[in-house]
Amino acid sequence: MSPRFLVLCAALVAGVLALVPHTHADRPVATLAQLGHGLSGQGELIGNTPRRILHFTFDDGPHERETPRLLAALDRFGVKATFFFSASRFASGEKRNARASEIARQVAARGHAIGSHSFDHVPMARLSPPELREQLARADAMFERVFGARPHIFRPPKGSRNNALRAMLKERRDTTVMWNVGLADWVKRPAREVRETFFKVLSRNETRDGDRGGIVLLHDTHSWSVDAFVLIMEALRARNCELMASGEELYEVVDSLEPWVGKGALARAKAPDAKRQRTLRARLVQRCSGSSSKAARVMP
Image 1 (tube, one colour):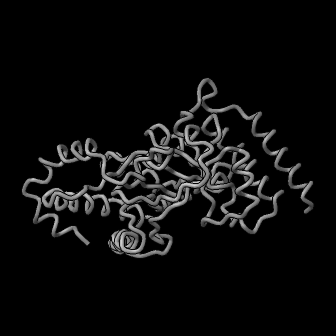
Image 2: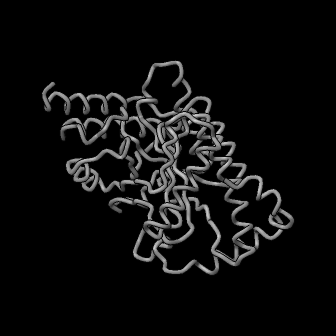
Image 3: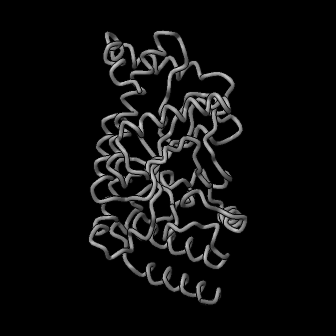
């Protein structure tokens, strides 16, 4: 296909979808803040931080069974995450994607952030500029149809990007969100092994780069990934009890990517934020009392 033809196709798709009424035409389904409009124009966020700050992100959904399970787990632990949706799921006629838009709106209703993971989940570094524009335009059209607006945060599938994509995202004032705590959870294995990988990666990052936290990549399309999230949160709680007993910095699971943004970003601070740490310790006092034997059971 010629580049001109691809661009025309993308414009046609966007125009047709714009004529389809939104389910909530009177108001956006997701707030602009949830769609990352407040984070626009930040370049690339990798996640590096010397602080024990973590933010969980989930790729490739929504999934008819696993995303609702994950939402329940996130509610249980009081965690807000960022979901990078593959927009083709909203356009797919497959039975497994029949409820994709409904589930995605549930994610928004629970207060989580939403980003774009392109349309077709293809390695974008292999695409020509017209093909890249087609991917972005088709994804935008579907997000606008489902949520009422397009996201300004983007994660390239498999982290694959080239200079042409970087230039386009900069022009659009989109922020690329990468990760520094990857667990390779697309490989099927027991959830406890994914949990063990999480702590191994944290340890490796601290030894190699001095990074004690970061942006965590998981997928809401695998049962073992959802189960692993639960195990990771339980282990983090146990580890925090140990850290509190020894007077060390506690792990903080933050609700957004904000700590990595701006000149005074919390994630780049040379020392832990004393006020935030005091708040965490106050919340842990009751939970950690008499928990040493339980901690020993759940630690990897």
